[in-house]
Length: 167
Image 1 (cartoon, rainbow, N blue to C red):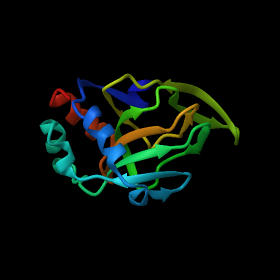
Image 2: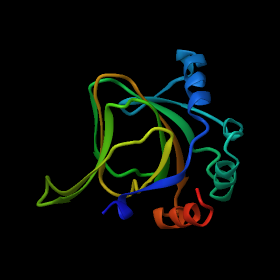
Image 3: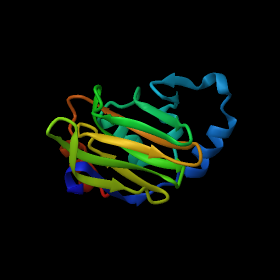
Image 4: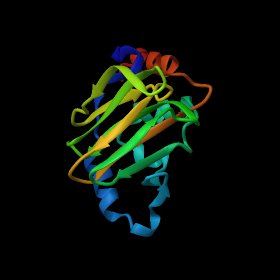
């Protein structure tokens, strides 16, 4: 199932410490409320330590889809499919007690084929956000770096790029 829901990248991140410092240095007024969470936009210059990701961002024209998301403690982001992107490359920065679940709806409100994504440290995951998924966060704030791939780019397209470029 995971081959259709998410892909674990081979390359480990060099950005975690840099991004955590950026979080701590960012004034609260720079965070924007977004649905039931908050985010602040980052720029391609923040990826200087990751040249392969800089190339990926430019190749798929994602310069305006770079953000760090903050989820509140004891929070569940309801089941959904993203509307403006088909996939996202995510790196969990802070929040070891949170996870994402993918599932398929049947008979109106029932779910089957549940699959839990437990993020590993310093690991990027490509998520197929065109599939139903939900986020559960428990005791602490969760911070997630996310690169959104605008439509019409698909999960399969971006995954193939990641494989071909050993990312």
